[in-house]
Picture 1 (cartoon, rainbow, N blue to C red):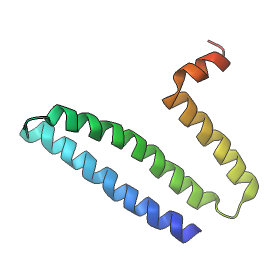
Picture 2 (tube, helix red, strand yellow):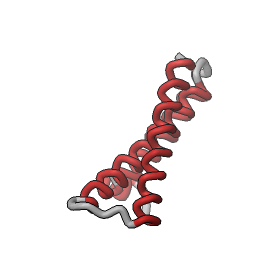
Picture 3 (cartoon, rainbow, N blue to C red):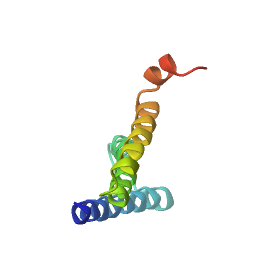
Picture 4 (tube, helix red, strand yellow):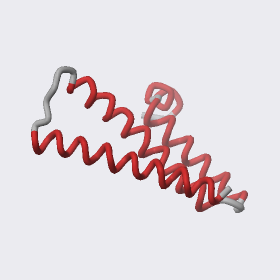
Length: 96
């Protein structure tokens, strides 16, 4: 399993770097075409999800074979995902 996590993390890391490079090139060189704002919006959204997925995969690679540490990691990962993508749910259960 550790090899699978490593391979997936490598692919996601590559995609994240490509997205950062394209966004930076767009800012520096002013690459502009019809619908570029829409495309950049999708890139921002994909980049946010990919960074979390990459961090999750690297964490899974680290905790592979360590059941208790893996359980703690999953709890922390669930907390981060819920509070980031579903703030209304987090606000309902966490004190203000």
